[in-house]
Image (cartoon, rainbow, N blue to C red; front, side):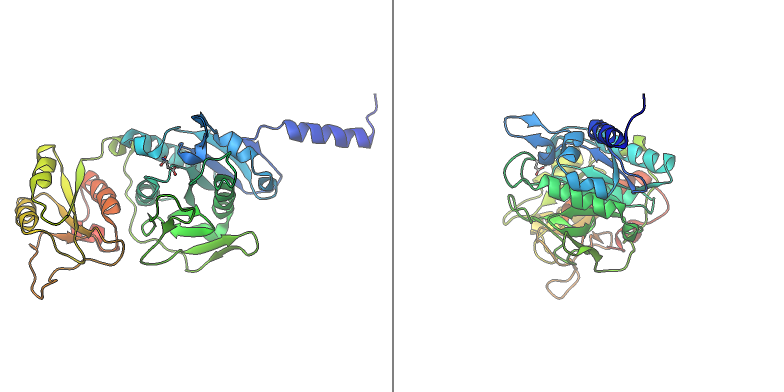
Length: 349
Ligand code: ASP
């Protein structure tokens, strides 16, 4: 039987409509892999979940942007992610890049609560020049004014762009592109919660103007070729936060629990209570790495807030890394074990 051209066109439309959302394909479009881990972006009211495939299906604009495939490595709130999840995610990202030279980039969907830690971990251990772009949402993906589909679309546009290469891991939410080392969550509910307080975003993305980078490519530090098994078994590093009248009880508890390093989230630009100052000097002097950061949102820390150096020489400054990110780098540095001093690890930041 001969099929007329109108019938052929009809069959093509039927066929395209039947394609799984996990392979929203179009010839010659860049291939982007989406790896879902859970979070609010992967959820709907009533305790329901929204899979990566469903999310991609909410975004008809993708058909003109990228050839998208979807995988799931976890489906949990980001407060429940573990080092084992990190190890699987890193293993999967490396394997996907290695298997497909034509893969343009990877998007990781993630809960916003620990997103900055995962993004920085990926920045430290993924060496491929192609972009890894982390995104999420502040509202569930099926509610009125959901931000997830828009963030996902923008993240995929960023991951598909050659201009995103050699920039390390990026984070995309609310029309902004941020560097993993610089970005932090600043508001518990706002859609524009992610900011880079010291540097501003590295790029902007909008439907009107497309993707526009504000800085040349480049990444801050070097990458660590840690195997997934080493990531699953990252050493314990604790953060000891400063507060008026605080003593060294939490610092001692961290050591007792087996901490292989400690991050002090001090006051202001470089002070801590006398008790924590004495105890952390003793800890650093005894050979446990101590990194000094600040509980303040932005700015560097330095010694000599009162005009005289007080820190032991063994203290290392976190640079512009906040305490959560200083912890990630300290864990990775201790796990890597060789090749650089603690000062060298933190110097680029
Ligand atoms: N509770 C969520 C999480 O998984 C918050 C979010 O995704 O925005 O981090």
